[in-house]
Length: 88
Image (spheres, rainbow, N blue to C red):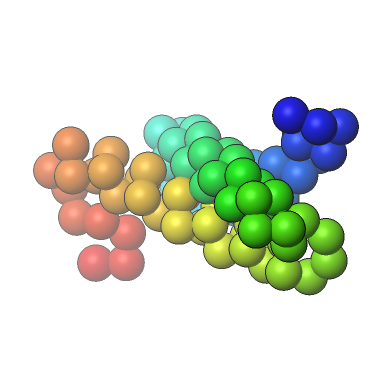
C-alpha cells in the first residue's frame, strides 16, 4: 500500500454512503459504505496493476466499482432479510 491508497478509497466511501442514503435506512447506509469501500479497493488494485492509476480512468473506475460494491452489499442484505431489493 502506497501513500495514495487511503485517499483513493474516499470516493468509494462517499459513493457508497450516497447510495445507502438513497435507500433510506441505517443498515443500507452502513452496508452501502462498506460495499463502496470494498469496490473502490478492488478498483485501486486493478487500476494499479493495469498501470491506469492516474487521471480520469482511475476516478471513473473507482466510482463504477464502488457503486457496484454498494449495490451488491445492499442487495445481499435484502435477500438475507427476504425483502424486495431497491427499486422494486
